[in-house]
Amino acid sequence: MVRIRERKYGNKKYYYLEHSFRLNGTVIKKEKYLGSSIPKGIDRIKRDFLTRVYTQKWYLSLNKIKAAYKKDIDSATPSEKDKEIEGFMIKFTYDTQKIEGSTLTLKETANLLQHGVTPSNKPSRDVKEAEAHSNIFYNMLKYKKDLTLQLILEWHHSLFENTKKDIAGKIRTRQVWIYGSKFVPPSPIEVMTLLDDFFSWYNKNKMKMHPVELAALAHLKFVTVHPFIDGNGRLSRLVMNFILNKLGYPMLNISYKNRVGYYNALERAQVKKIDSIFVLWFFRRYIKEHQRYLK
Image 1 (tube, helix red, strand yellow):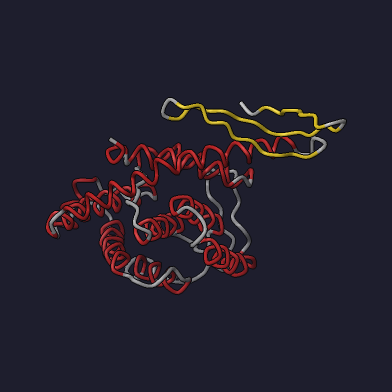
Image 2 (spheres, rainbow, N blue to C red):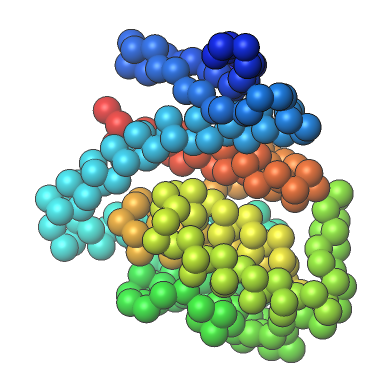
């Protein structure tokens, strides 16, 4: 619980936010100076303070995950690395496509991507987009330069060139809606300016921000711009994993079975315009998915 503490120095009063938590058996206290009076918007200030406290607390676990992951990767043989990447690629492709309505099962996705076995009685669009996503994923891992709009447009074109050629690699010029969501994406006239803002933010923060927080915010900010008619979720999850992989962290698969919590965190962050709602959800999900590296 965040408390406001009053302290007197001579005849003057000063105010601080204070919060304590236990970490590895030790009580840690954090505080923030408010001034000689309690400022307006104190509830927002409390929320931002608490978010930063717990974000910094989670950094310890995130950094341990990175160190253990590096040790694991360094000790693996090339064949072991390839097999692990392939396993992640199959699950990632299955789940990211399933979230967007694909009818392929995990087994069908695996047979398709590992053995070239096309499932019967399934839409050809689902098959082609799964194959395309797999190719984009591997190209993403090999890409040595940094994230750019041109790169994302190329990914989008590759994803849809065989299924929706009319929108492949093209920024939308029409209004879109997310059915069932309270969030309404920006109007098409705003999209290019917002994309410029996104890359300006990314380039400014990529060397300053914790990599997992950077990946979470890049996902949120990009999908909030919603620059395409279709494929925004898939592209934002590729952007997220591009950042994690590039900066030496294990990638994250957001599973279909966890989609409700994922959608809720995105929507609440977008509607309330509070990025930390999604970031904190992301941290919890990331740590849970990579718990094996903390043992």
